[in-house]
Image 1 (cartoon, helix red, strand yellow):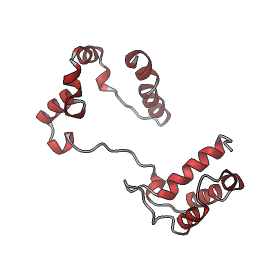
Image 2: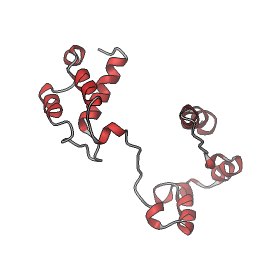
Image 3: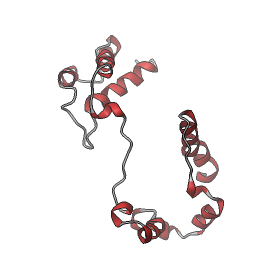
Image 4: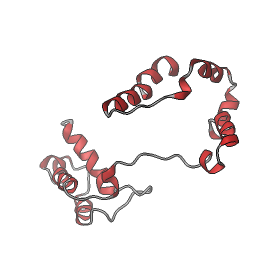
Length: 147
């Protein structure tokens, strides 16, 4: 299922769409058919060792420093996640104080007021701006007409 349905239609297609939309080139090197066939032939215990990707990590350690191969998984933060300022802050304030947001009642109004009063003080575990995380959910709900 992964090879025939998930990979071509989800991550591979997303990378292709996003890079083409912004004039970027990207390659998906692990989709060479011979490499995929070899990986499919490996026994599961070999693939699942070391928390997954054992073979790839073992090979990587021969050419890369351990701190590169064994570092924690990262992510790409949205720019507004780190520092909330105008005009993004104005859009966030409008979304969270909109009548539909208050009617929906998902968020504690006192907490929202506290976040809006100090938009860059509150951080999630990985350092993301808490206000931005709350606001993006609310903006998504509004954009999709979810009451």
